[in-house]
Length: 388
Image: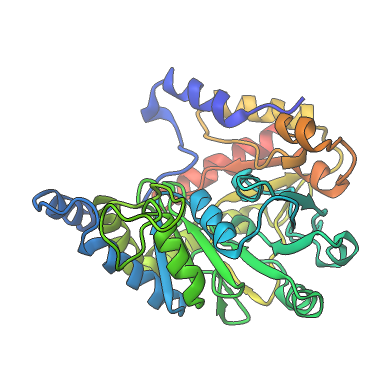
């Protein structure tokens, strides 16, 4: 049985002395972010104001694309991309079952079907070798996911896209700042999307961003997020069915400062990652995600995999004991295809994607954020090793 350990452990943390916890995640907020948010609160433009445009331009400049369209979450950003591409009922999108559920949920919002293929056991990314056999006459697009801040091997994926004339969307919600062969994550597909939840590299509290070089996708996304209005139309003129997916200026002000500090933030996260990698390098009972030499990673989380000698029950027992020791932890991720809705609606069953299932049964997310000290990483690693 797959247990939602994030829910269970969050409830336990709320019932204990938070000061004794080594938190699983946390944002990196300075006085500059606070000042920027307060400055917006002193103006009459809390939404549809200049900070949204400033934030969008900062992201577009950083990624090297013509357009960045902000919204209220990465999930809704992906939805706007699919709607802009006209992908919906009867269409199929090939993607990974090892991801946060929002990636494939977004495909289903307009009636398309996510088709999963298994992941690479070394990188934990979608296995490019399995994509082409999964293509049918209904396949319209690929949705590679940049898992945990790293990217898949894009070259063979783009080759398939070109030969089979498919659309390609990049879920980079976990990968702001990552590069594949020098190309920024989010800029590799026809369109990409970032998320800004508080555990991400940069945060707006809640928020997302569509990035693209396509005028058509950008213009349609701007309309869709704003109740279907066209930019040059009046407030009560709605050209199409739209949504309220807007980001407000309060969130955007926070995001603009965060993106301006991105190099500093990523350097801190890289330092914490190196502390873990050094301490776990000789631990045979635990492996870490393989990072291709073509990838310059922007670290999102610190997830380790127990060896095959451990069962899912063993992993869950370790999670309970880490939590009891005051160490934030979770499982990352439950296979999407084994979520109840996907099993009921799409007929997926255990055993269809064995690499993903074996990986998901043995993953442990350890505390990872910029405020971690080296002494805290020592504590986490020593405690983990004592439980193996």
